[in-house]
Image 1: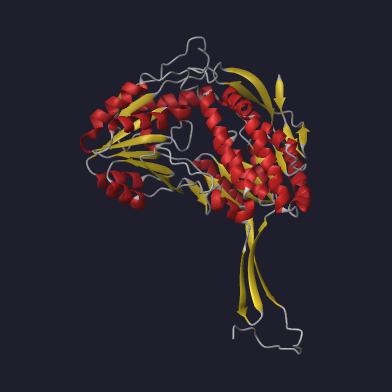
Image 2: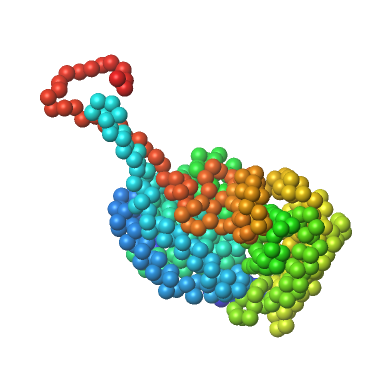
Length: 497
């Protein structure tokens, strides 16, 4: 059986732990690989490799860094189908969705290729007599990333390309559920000419995570995952003096006003709720139907939901693949039955779905729940699966009130033809990313991604301008060069006279 190892110092490295995790094909339910789990010593070796590499990489010219990143971008483009196949095989998402993931990750590589623009700094001359002040940004040193299973290529690419473009070295701890894509990203980076030790990968579980959070040579930690773990990451990392950006979970609401195009809204609700089997933090998990739109909108969503083609991700006919594990599938299914017990109307029940020839796969059909009480678990919890909740509101004010009362604030959307209502919504809603007739408002690479409230722990969002700020530290330099004709000593306190 193939073993996925660590990547340290520019090459694969076996672990001495003797501990392994199973890597499954979610479409068949069978184990296809195993992944080595790191020891504390493995993590220390990766950090040491990164620290040694920083001595030269941090001083490497921006021109050379970006030349490597340009070559890396070309290799990613040439191998995008291969990377997508690795994602499909271990995560289960359909191949077209996996290709989209690779493309969105490459946006940040392209942003990193233009890092020279973002590291220009500022200069003010003659702030006082013959005194100039300059502001520059410098790398932190060794930084780390801890990434989730749902985007095994994209989320790592949200982090390490920008970090290394800024002059840092990087240690990545990817999800143990689907580790092959990130390992391939590291191989291609080496092929592009990235020096040994600049990018390292340690596989594993909480042992590896905790050591990265505690290690004195790790200056900053980026994380994407669930809210409880994001909160833990922040507290643990800050306790050890590290800079943190930790993106947590979500319960994204899609508000539909009575004037909206209901066919369009129904199409977008289907795409946003059930794409990638709902296993994404920007999925629409709640539709808020305002006024008398509810019955008609629910009917149109239900009609479309029943016709979705569910099957293995490598089948071009499949529109939705399996979930990541059997345990997660069963947990998601439990929300449908509990919602019925708690007063919701189950319009579409996908819990008994099977795929012929793949009866042992981790498949779940799509579910649609209507008139869900706000106290129900299906409304309160992040389900992270193909379950769409519909709640009703009489007015816009009631609708935005319940959205703003949610403890999460990742993404949200409004569907309307009314520009005034849309403008009011984008200013009043308490969320970090807002879509107007766009159900999944993931920003392009040169804007930053991140939520509010329990969806973000730390001060800065990921990638874009916030990403550059996170992976660098500012320095202000004040200089005065005396005129050659001047001489003498002045012990007075400096002033701006």
